[in-house]
Length: 366
Image 1 (cartoon, rainbow, N blue to C red):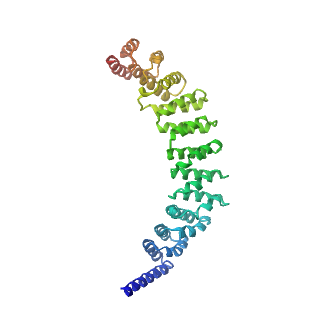
Image 2 (image 1 turned 180 degrees about the vertical axis):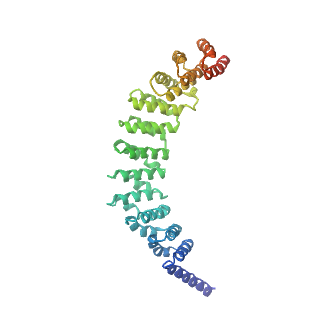
Image 3 (image 1 turned 120 degrees about the vertical axis):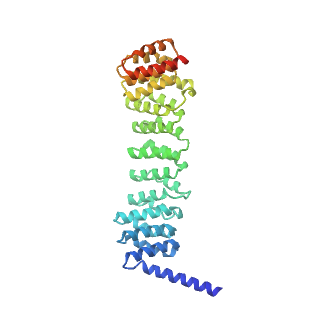
């Protein structure tokens, strides 16, 4: 039994040696086949012979080597690949990064020092690769790099923390927004906070106190994506002191959050502030789309304070807003509303007449 086992081991080693010789063959088909087989066997000792083939002139061979090295994995491969991050050939660098990203969880000890490398591109590669690591310590080292002097590095770190959904990075990312000046880094930071998703609405609401218009705009857009009703009151309060541009962004965010919501669940303070905001928005020079949705929300709120404005809208030439006002009035009880809708049954616009008839029926049911 022992003799048979020894023969088997010898045979395996001989076959591996043959494959190692084959990856040096002049025929790219032979090199490719050898790389595939070495990778499928997953023997780490063969990695040093495969790594140089990332520079092979044949694309098929290079692709086979990438797959083989990913299958083999291990810290030794990461160490062997680090020098390839500095080569001029972008295809070689990208191949090395691809492999390292796929095996980053095998070891981060060789990668962490690269976050402090003198070359910013190496620091970016390291941040990108660590963003694929499942090692629990990875976020810790990325957080320490958030104050890197280069914005491209900071952006890479931020994106990796989001990819890792690193909840422990939330406070550091919020702090970054207080001093970050680069627009794309700010955007990436907020996107990463959304990806992390750890009490994201409350985190974003805190950012409404930020003094930077850009941060406020991006935060407002992010709050819109959450669809969270708890964001409505803070947004309304911010709107009271906002610039016209930001106020418009807040209006869009509120519409996005509320358009599919049951507004009857809103607390009194929120409902009252929202009604005042929507009435002002409807009376403004905002675009028709925004005013249409504002009118729609006034109807859902059953806002009696908006009735006079809505009745006034019935005399508008803009049938788009006119129809929105008809629908809104049908949701608000009142004899005056009933009379106004009855008069519109004879309107010159066929669409207005049709909507008026349907809305009149709805109002009579109340």
